[in-house]
Image (cartoon, rainbow, N blue to C red; front, side, top):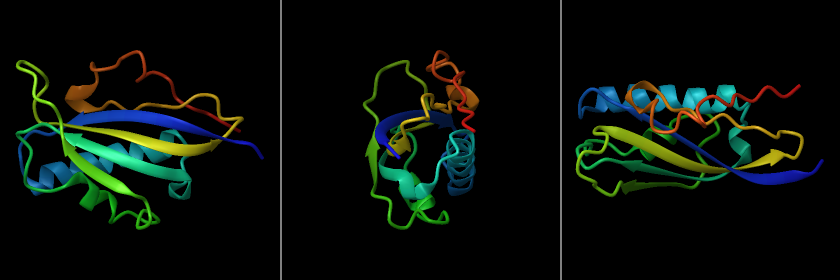
Amino acid sequence: MNWRVRAIRGATTVSENSVTAIREAVIELLDELETRNQLDPNEIISMTFSVTKDLDVIFPAAIARERPLWHNVPLLDVQQMHVAGSLEKCIRFLVHVNLSSDKTQVYHPYLRGAENLRPDWNLSPIHSS
């Protein structure tokens, strides 16, 4: 089988800067990433999370590390560059994965208040048989 490195983006927002709200949003976002892309965590090369400056109570990577099979995934958290008027309370990710070359499309999950950040990517579900 031939493999190809692919990058997948995604984002979500939270209602408040709390561990509960961030945990719920990150779990939902990663569930969507895995399910819609039929992604096996063993295929993940690395993942970077960025958060806006108003989110500072927990690292999204710490939440991801609790997922089954994610303990060996290299994860990194960074603060998103602040731009006046940009979307607040936002969590973004960039993940690099090894996918079989027959998977030609990926789904970039943009959820909640982040749905309009990249509507062109948010509508590309993968359905590989």
